[in-house]
Image (cartoon, rainbow, N blue to C red):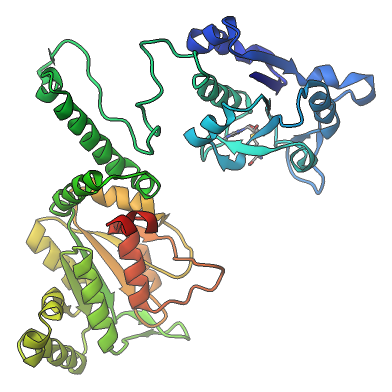
Length: 437
Ligand SMILES: C[S@@+](CC[C@H](N)C(=O)[O-])C[C@H]1O[C@@H](n2cnc3c(N)ncnc32)[C@H](O)[C@@H]1O
């Protein structure tokens, strides 16, 4: 395999002469060729960068030297030509595995504001980012990617190193690892690892992998190949966690906006009462507050709920009875907060929802992680009518990113929004994963 790196700073690639990658180069497992882009400027072109068309600060890397360089370096029609860019697809282990099978990989390291788009359009087979942050140049990303590709080449890792059992190799994060001494600073190596029972060790490691992935990167579980045993382990991890995270949902009827942005009190609807109660129960929430201060409305809720709690409905449909048992009526969001504080001894963190993007926005995987890791109670706020007031949004500790589907239209009923959001925060996190259950 051959890797070419096109850069304005060839000296930056000294780290690739060290350690495992350095050994792979020395043993000729890889032909590594770092080339200065300036070698292709020639007297005709001179510069490597120029001003931005359309105005704006900074410089852009010119296309001519890069076109010339690729024509010079390309050994095969199938060469993968990779542009490093924060605007690319995020590089991952699967990409590393795929690229480790290529005959030739050429990296183009950007600088300044980036690279003239025609290089991407005409020459690149891939545009890769190494994460959602901006670096000064593409040298570190090219090194990061080259390292992860080279270590996968047959023979690159010695006997004592293995790429088989590690993070991502089976779609999960790797389990914790220990070495001697068995006790250090009062911290001991788990007993199971000190015994010689291979089956027990295998099971412990798998459980730890699943636990770490569930806690830190739950979205990976949707794609990981999971066995029936894994699903059982995940179920017990989830049940254990559910006992810790304490989450309530509130459906706010007052104060909310109407179409004209006036603050109003909306009427309760039977469907919202029932469907949200059922969703809250399905996803294991601690309770469902109906925020409604109007006396007549409270009476109406009381009679609807009573029918299912005590009357004919309770005997007719015990499941519905169970779900509605989670409903609590209150006059204000303040009351709901006070009630949670009374039960848990802590003020809940407020998580508001909105169909429109705004400040304090947090995405679902991040919120899911925070709730799973936090000891604080949470109250999820959903507005009826035209949504929660600006004042309420300002009070919230977090605001969940609006739900989007196929396009810009996202006018969901509040009960649909509740179900989707609860699934994103507490559900299996992916169709493939839930199908297996
Ligand atoms: C300052 S950055 C250009 C940022 C560009 N204007 C943008 O906002 O997308 C300069 C160069 O650093 C490299 N770079 C910066 N961050 C990167 C990342 N997260 N992944 C891959 N390459 C990155 C790219 O080669 C890029 O052309």
